[in-house]
Image (tube, rainbow, N blue to C red):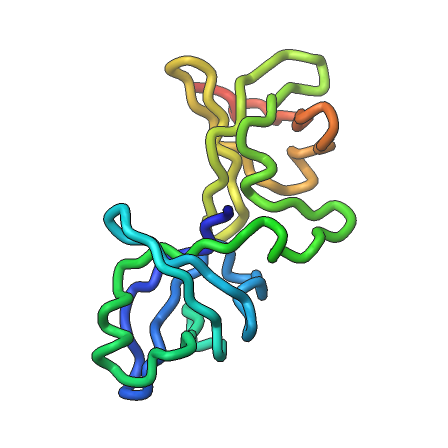
Length: 166
C-alpha cells in the first residue's frame, strides 16, 4: 500500500472532499480506483467516483458519499492505494516510496547514509538523507543527483562545496 495524501476538508454540499496529495502532479487517484481511507487505526475501502483539480487540492467524490455530512466524516483520513494501482513510472521517474531506504553515495564512493524520506519544496523535491545523527537535504535536480539505480538501491550524487556542511 502507498499513502497518497490526506483528506483535509469538504467542498460545497455535494459530498466532495478536499484532498491534499503528497505528490501534486500525480493522477493516481482517478475514477474507478479503490482507495483505503484510514484514521485512528480504522480503515474502510471506498471507490473514487470523480476527481477534479482545485488550487493545490483535488476535489474527490467517493461512491456513496452524496452530501456534506457524509463527506465531513472523512475529514482527517489518510488515503492509501495498492501498489498495483500505481501507473508504471516512465524513464527516469521514481515514486518517493521507491527512494526511501536507498543508500546515498558521492561520485567518489563516500557513503552519506540512506534516504529517510522525500520532501517537497517550492524549488525542488529534497532527499532527506540520514546517517546516525547527521541529516542532509539533497535537492532532486540533475546538478546534484547523477544516477539512481533501482537494482543496487543506490543514489549517486555530486555535491557542491557547502552542500554537506553541518
